[in-house]
Amino acid sequence: MRRVPVALWILLVSLIALGAFLFLDLKEKKDPLAWDLDLDTIRFEDMAFEKQSSFKGDRFYASFEKDGKKYRYRASTAVPNLFAEFEQFKIQGLYLFDAEIKKQFPEDPFADSEKTKCMELVPSSENAFKVCASTEERNGKVFVVANRPQNQGEAYLVQSYLFDRLKQDKVTFLEKRVFLYPTATSTEEMNITLMAPMDVEKATVLKRKYPEKLHLLRKEKEQDEKKLVYWASENGQEIPAQLSNPLDSVLRQFQIQFFSFEYDFDPAQMWEKATPILEATLVAAEDGDPVKTFHVEVRRPEQELEFQGKKLLLMQSSELDGVQVLDLETVTRTAGYVEGIYATEISQGNSNAPAQQ
Image (tube, rainbow, N blue to C red; front, side, top):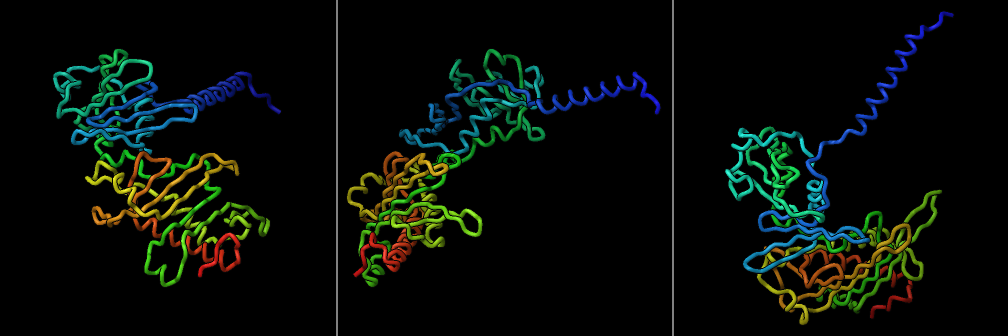
């Protein structure tokens, strides 16, 4: 057997080491950052996006002024995404802010101008500063400058969509969903009371009596060596999946149909004279352990309420500020599932459901 020359062994070891180094370098390589900051607020034109941090996590809000009135709402997922992008500001290229690039900006690069889109960033640990992007787009990228001392004299090439998305409709940045379930949680318990029928005439013909109350619990069982999840009443009676699962889904779909800045009526003034229709309490849990409880109450206004072709009801929730409006159709679907489950419990002899007369 011929011996491998020592020089060849050294070459092989060197190549392996070089390969490992290059692999690790590629793995660790990240896009360069213009800054890495913890932001409290982002301001763009008449909108302000806020981040409130606590031991429970971050909460985001969007606020603005319209016709002399101030509005503040929970923010949609678009806002935390915005914070993530501008806290760690990734760049495609670093340039000197020279005479050639300055042609794309007004004489004062941070003055309001048709040549730029500007925003203000408010870090938690230093002074606020302005960031302005040129409106001259090239291959999907624009030049950006910041009046922050650490970034003075520099211009950055970034993806233009970072600033384009700020021009979207206000509603894009507002959270419509009523119930925001924590990550990895699901509904563990539903307490629902249907206090009045959605269709009074039909309920009269069927001689239904109200309120109709449901208390449903999520359970597990073994079937064909598989673990199955199902809904059951308080006495352990299994509820048909075609009714219980859609009920859980439709309740989680409750959302603000229109925001208060979009209409000129006052839902709060309608609330006291409105007819109670539905109350629901949902318990969100992770691996069977309760994490959060949600509550919502829905009422029908004294006079039929319609806006932009949508028939509306009123709602209040532990998750919302003030009285909001939601789509009548969503509540009608919810009531249909409640009535279906209630009728099923009666037919199965559930003592917790009073017999209809």
